[in-house]
Amino acid sequence: MLTRRIIPCLDVKAGRVVKGISFINHRDAGDPVALASAYNEAGADELVFYDITASSDERNIMVEVVERTARQVFIPLTVGGGLRTTDDMYRMLRAGADKVSINTAAVLNPQLITDGARRFGSQCIVLSIDARRMADSADDSPRWEVFTHTGGTPRSTGLEAISWAQRGVELGAGEIVINSMDSDGQQSGYDLELLRTMSRAVAVPLIASGGAGSPEDMYRGLAEGEADAVLAATIFHFGTYTIAQVKAYLAEQGVPVRQTV
Image: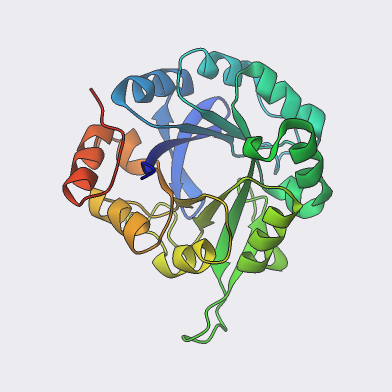
């Protein structure tokens, strides 16, 4: 049985890791290089690095920060933010990333997913989706809308999240990160309905993001949300829980995890 992955997320703004609530009111959480090194030593299974304002600022990702971060980790590193071309992806892979994550650029140019998959392989292409529950969704048939530029002022796309995820996989994405904008930073648990619906709709690994506040939340994301991995930021950055504590709890619930030493 495949082990479930625990993934800390480094949201980087102006060279510092930050964490907000529903994408606003960011708090400083530290230096990305130091945090990356600490999570590598603590037993994280992977690490995600997002330059969260690269797209909204219409600039390229900070390559030098990615390079310094990559030198500190010996676990898979996914990098995203401001990647608009396959050459941008190549620079990140050369800088030490194992996978690249695209969000805004993929919505604006879906062909980028296919071009990236053809050049580097689908296993390198992660489609990240920021989604908000639609206010007019009926209780028995919920729908979520995709937003872009979420590092600045979120922009509505009119895309339905489940359909967009399915199209992304058809175009070549090898993994999906789904972030609930409603739950982000709230520490009240993932949007399990969103996770479950998307997990059953796509045939690639799904990473849950947005809302983890406890090991139990992460367990529910895996068990009830049917995700393949769980991503968290706040609870790790500010010392509420350690990766070892989360993995110990998951193991007690019968979830297969890679144990820390």
